[in-house]
Image (cartoon, rainbow, N blue to C red; front, side, top):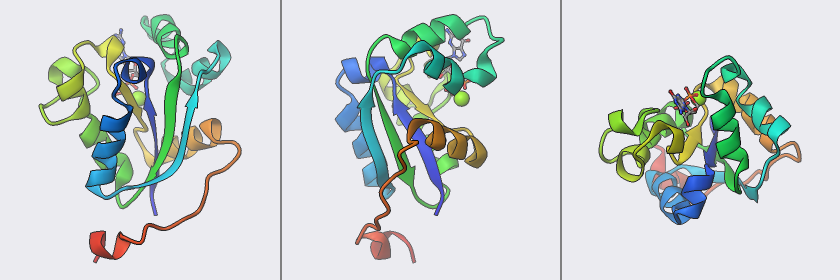
Length: 148
Ligand code: GDP
Ligand code: MG
């Protein structure tokens, strides 16, 4: 089954959105496979966002991510990478549809509350980076009511 890496950014943690965000993924029918509160250092954040290192906002982005704890998660389910991105909404909250996490809970692109992997391949890399200890293997007993 497909997995994705989801991170509640420091603004999401500070603003009290941990429960709200977990609830949206739970209610959809996805399964939580990894979860931790972690404050990352600069080299780690730079590695996570390595693909964006040439962007003018890169330093501000790294400062934002290392400023306070984040919640790192692995969610599993059918098409969870692409569907997770839809639940999250567009990168810029000004363009995120109402009903999405960023559309409902954020205003600016530099404080957009949540990260989600953009492909199955980046999900694989991000899960390996954030959960080097591995994740627990378990199956929800509700799967028979979510999948036909
Ligand atoms: P995402 O996959 O939707 O998170 O977007 P990207 O991978 O393109 O960018 C990563 C993160 O960098 C975004 O979630 C934003 O927090 C931040 N970011 C992206 N574009 C901009 C920008 O133009 N300005 C600022 N300040 N931050 C940006
Ligand atoms: Mg991205």
